[in-house]
Image (cartoon, rainbow, N blue to C red; front, top):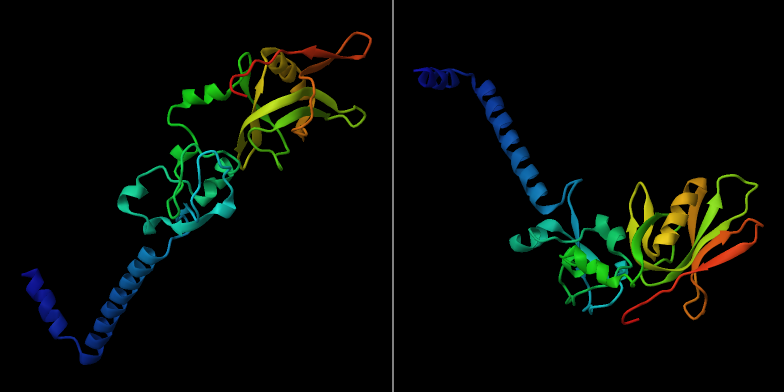
Length: 240
């Protein structure tokens, strides 16, 4: 009964009022359709953009932004959207890493092509006798996995000299984040202990070594007379 009363009320509207009502309804429908069209064609503020290879990439190549373009996530197939694709916001986490799988042109970059699904495989890259250790640092420019670096302590106090904590450390991976950044390096237990003891005294910066330079390896300490003493660490590697 109420439905019929509502219908009769519409019929009793004056033509001018009825036209205004119809115009309002049409405007609402047009606005809704426009919003649906734009949301389906254009990613919103939170829309993700996916990295896609612009050339064939081989296993072992370093990941650089120049080898990829970005596309909207909705342009991917439904199956690919469910995969662990790398977004442009995650580029900092994978740039400089080496591919562990081939990627063909036009294919999205997957996390599986950068990091092994089995995290234990990462330990195979660590030389025998050493440990993977994360070092928070303020400098990551030009640092890439596989390079050798010296870990240098810059003291908080201005009247203190910088100190080389560890020489010739192998960089295993990078960890770039908005709030902090650092590197994972291969160190001996003794070197880790030495860094833990001194890192609170200042900031750690990285000095990249010349790859052709033949240098010793070890933590640098000071004896009671103040002279620097090198603690030699034997490094046993497989396949290097």
